[in-house]
Each structure stands twice: as structure tokens, then as C-alpha cells.
Length: 173
Image (tube, rainbow, N blue to C red; front, top):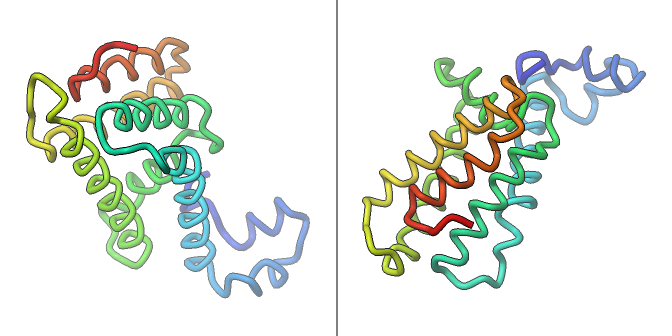
């Protein structure tokens, strides 16, 4: 249903609760949607970022990040794929607090990607600008998400992993 489809009424119906029972913890539809965005971001961090704890910066860490990211896209817990990607498409032209929240999350992820590549690039023979690499990786992830979800392509994850690894200068796995 996407973020727009998430309403107090739809959640109440899905849970078999009254609207007032759902409204209480959230207060408004916008607060419910904001909570959904925070929860989705938490799932992404738990799946993709947290497994990197204790792994020193460098090519191995970047390779693990790519593998975890592809795994998240391939086995995404959300119908339709990455929730934040879908929400960013829904909200990119609409100003407001939800768009700001998505923008903050996407900006933080771009920053992490540039930092991860910057820390690893001395181990590679070619050096690309970190911002360019982040744009490339995010674009590939969006394409991979679409191929996995919309096209139901069973080879998309493997191709995506190979493309991401090539984009940063890692050898094929």
C-alpha cells in the first residue's frame, strides 16, 4: 500500500482494533507514518549496518556492506521491497515532515557510503570520487530492487552484487 496507504483506519482493520485504539499510541496519521519510517530504517540498520560492527574500515568492510545490502534487497521483509526507497519515491516532490525524515535517512546513508568507500579506496587500483560511487551504488540498488520486486528476476541479486562490487573496484565474489 505504500506510505500513503498506511492510515489509522487501515492499520486498525488489519489488526482487528478500533481506530481509537490505534490512534492513541500514535496521535495522528502522520505520526503513524513517521513511526513506520523509523521502524523500517531500524530494520535496514539491523540487517545491513549493524553486522559491520567491529569490522575495521577498508575493502573487506565495504564488501560485507554490499553483500548485506544485496541480501536485504533479495530477502526484503517489506512487500514491494525497500520501504525507504518506496517512500522516497512517494514523497520526493511533497514538502513536509515525512519528506524531511526520508531525506535525512537517505542523506545519512549516502554519507555512510561515501565514508566507507573513502576508507577503502586506497586498497583499490582505481580511485573514483566518493560522491560518484555513492550515487552509482544507490542507483544500482534501486534498479536491483525493481528487478527483484517488479520483474521477479531470480538472477537480479547476483548481477547486482557483481555490478556493485565492480563499481567500487572489488573483485567478483
